[in-house]
Length: 518
Image (cartoon, rainbow, N blue to C red; front, side, top):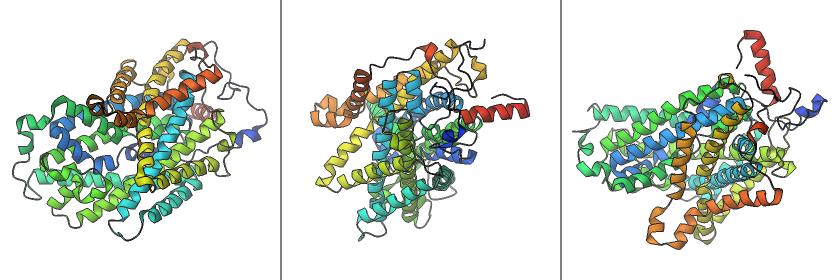
């Protein structure tokens, strides 16, 4: 059945009448310059970083090879369900605001307000974190050069790259992510050859999996702890939802990216954890290292060295630097687009909604870069105490956004059906609805509540406050906005399901040409 109250084609995405003069419509708009390969690599590269290259060893040391494998598989399943939810909404309504737009339209304006500012802050602080990490990594080669010098240079370079165009960002991210992907593939290949005795001197590759209870060292509590760490490792996968707002053909390419990226990510993570578990005993003290400065103890470095590959530490340091720059590049892009979107929705100052002739929201970019610079400077003052708190505030932000994606998708599908649309008409349909978003939502609530359960059980009040402070700040934004604006939950029959006009036009043109509808 067709929807009887469908918004007419001459309405803008906000539901108001479109401006008759076409010139203003072209002003302050983003440009769709990213291709399929850009989206594919952004989705894959967004979740491959220091969490895999360095911290993965710590998860095996904490929970044993079996425990780490179970935790990463569970998180991978959760991320898969979330990506399906995001894919269904993004393919239908590909906008740069993505999460905050969906939360605003399908839950409530106040919920969208809190999600948007939460996500912007999360990535702005992540940029600062990556600047600090870049300085640490560079000290591997040039220990006499202060870290702030490298941080300043990298911030300037990343800001300049983002200022060029969306295509320039996509191209830069493509090559940075490609280096990470090639490294993981080389690691998997070397690991398999070592397991079968072609490289190195491994005697029994399954010996580490025959240690009885040590395969699941620490039991369920350790698996839960690793589950939290693994969740941070996968954060960034949702970037494809933001990038869809500037993709050339998002209704075709977003579903393609969603379908392909999960299996690749699971192969990388599950494969890497299995190989590390085979080749390095969980009790090896090297696995306890978890920082960017511990490149010599990275499980990737250890495996490459045992495979007889020369200069393994230097090579992995370069790869880790690539991962850091990739995260910083993505952080600037994602937070800039979120601030731009909020400005257009009246949730941020209008100046951040302006773009230059290349479709880049320069003021939003500079504001985000300034926050990244401020966050880095706080790391230089007071032994980094302020910086540590900033990181802790942003620590929960990614999980909160994921909760917003699950909640928004559940209500989106209900509203879509309530307004008379058919699920068959969706460009991409999440196959496990409604179970998918519900399971992901419950798993995320468990992750958020259990963030630092050790500190809760031990009664360490300050540590508990530091770990969970992001949650009351999010709730404060949500409830504060609701108190001021008196906004209410959006009714299913009143949800705005319109897509950007350029997408509807291109879909209509393609349908007329091919006879196939999206």
